[in-house]
Image: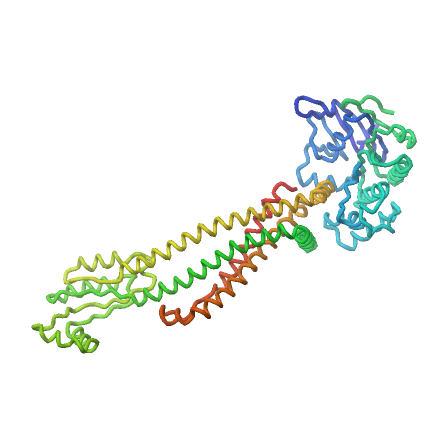
Length: 225
Length: 295
């Protein structure tokens, strides 16, 4: 039987901080291409650490983290940049630039990647239209609701057409209705073939969305459902 | 081209956002370059003055009355072979007497009291303008004094060496002051750009996360420093020029009349270019220091 590599594969992955505290311990995990996976667990379970390793903001202490067939520990700085261009990320606090309009926030990504201006505008408009906020493109983030801000952050994550979306507690600042609305956007993204990994502690939301979830506790894998 | 436009746009808006701090950096660079420009102007004019005076300076080699033709040939060989000598002229005892009578007609009677001609024959030596700076005159004077047939060697040694010492001292002081102010300017730019980087840390974080090339992350800060440096240079050159024009109007006649120079001279185009480039380099270095940790 043939075995195809998953988008994300971890082998005995551990991350140890100072004084020997394990944020992740011996995590072996596999996420297939086009899959939608929740990472769940209480605060301090290791969800955000896993995403930081995925973003290559930190390196694993032990084990291997392989994404799209590349061992992240072996990437050189230029390769890290290229790798990150294949990702989209969404954070709990949106990380929008308050000085820039909605349109500028979204177009910022292709702009700093050196994409020609006409393409920057076209792509930004397309994703804003897709998240339903093209009519607010001249507004500033502060003028938007939390749900709208998160949709802008999702638009920004999509503008570079990534193969993998990582989201860290994307609904942490939103009420349940808005949370479900945001999750529906992730489901639509996933339906287009993009792999989605969402870290959340909201078990009710996971139940409503109904996708595979990986539970962590004290850095260890405790359940996959 | 696209990248450069991005750097310039971002640097321009960053300068505008932090205009007070940017103004401080520009002023610091302007002060440093104004001082450098001032010293360069003073130095250039002093150098012209020294050259002028050195050209006018002469060395007189007085001969003994009993000097032999062979000894004169040896003296002429020394003069002809010296790099410090522009030209030399033999003045015989008769020529010296004739000149004395012509130049000091009122004192001509004094000479008549002597038996024979009391004035010695000599060589009047015109020195090269750069000879005073090269310190070869003492050596030349020493060789001539030790040559048979030479009674005495006179030249404006003390005056020229003091003038040279003053010019050298001025240069050393200007180098020290300009270096100190230059380092201070670079550090000020670095801190101002670092403040700008801090104000834009959210953008930088996004750029890093989306895999923006390091040049795109650092470029705007380096361009920001360079723009501040260039602005500082322009700001230094303007008052320097106006100050020079004012000084020329006020003291131009004195300089022409008393010092023998044909007016004061401003910085050469090359020196102006050097100041502009220097300002931009100082600013660029500050920007690079600030952007060092970003990738």
